[in-house]
Length: 299
Ligand SMILES: [Zn+2]
Ligand SMILES: [Zn+2]
Image 1 (spheres, rainbow, N blue to C red):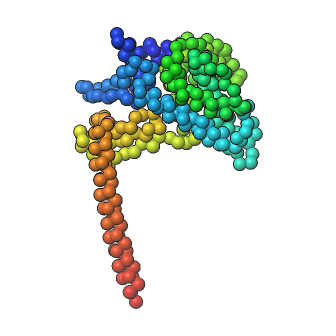
Image 2 (tube, rainbow, N blue to C red):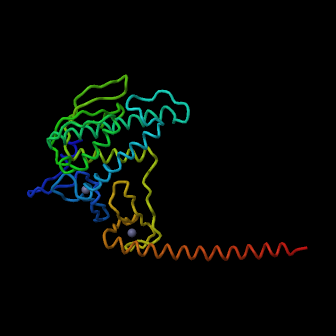
Image 3 (tube, protein in one colour):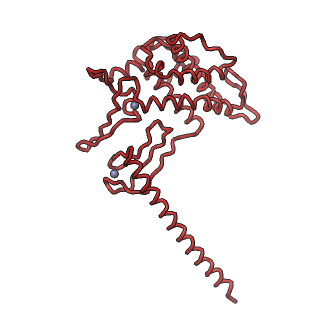
């Protein structure tokens, strides 16, 4: 992951480089040149740009809550390890339980492994918590409090696990053990603070997906100021994007004050639409009322 990510990062003489989120950078700019859409990540001196650093903080803030929600989903708040093998009662089916369980353990592994690295750098004592659940929450709080230490961590070998079906996506430097009967591979790879950010964002996204909180994009009724088509879409912030509107046809982006002006126009358009609909509804009722009255008046 690290090496793949960094080999693509071009570092300037003055240390400026692409935000590690690449094309997914929340502060990326998109331009259209000769019909080609060109996306440029924000330039930063750190691993992630400011917008994505804030996004990591938000994810760390929400992760403990999502973790509890997932835990509640399998109907057992106190259990701390091992897959639930029997369903029954009001709990979800076994397959879902196993998938949720695997995600819970993955969150735990990722959060605690980064927690450990930050503690070493900051000279803190080891994390002490009564259960894996409280350890995850404590870890998230520590990572948020020391987010710049986290994102600035140098490359160091870390242990990760991956499903065998995902084996072709392993980092190039991965070395480890394959467990064919269990269907997963355990490997070591060099990970940096940039990877920490990317892993936490991905975890947050996986939680939302597992819980059914998929991004809700909102389509505007105001036509695009550039191409005049009704193809404007406001992307959901939970999808990891900064608040912006994009034209799905000409790819024009609306940010900052332009976005505010556009949203004022959209609100007025929505109000006019509501008025129009209320009027039409009023007329429809009138027609209905007179036809019912007419019908009732028949002999
Ligand atoms: Zn970024
Ligand atoms: Zn457009």
